[in-house]
Length: 81
Image (cartoon, rainbow, N blue to C red; front, top):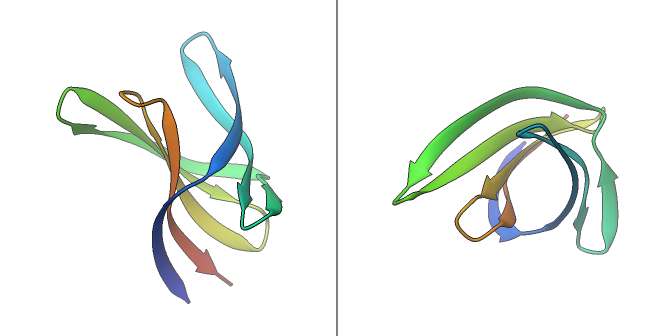
């Protein structure tokens, strides 16, 4: 079942040598630990870059977005298995 959220979330990420790697995110008081990043891609919103991460916790697939203009994270999509 696919669900679009487009809601702000708190994300722990590792930033190394220009690379971003999300580790976990909070959603409705629960911490979702990321086991694997399947795909990454970037888009543009005005002058800002949006970094997209297709991640999984081993059960569900999520899309996290990092907005470089506002330095904020958003949960854009979830697909439960």
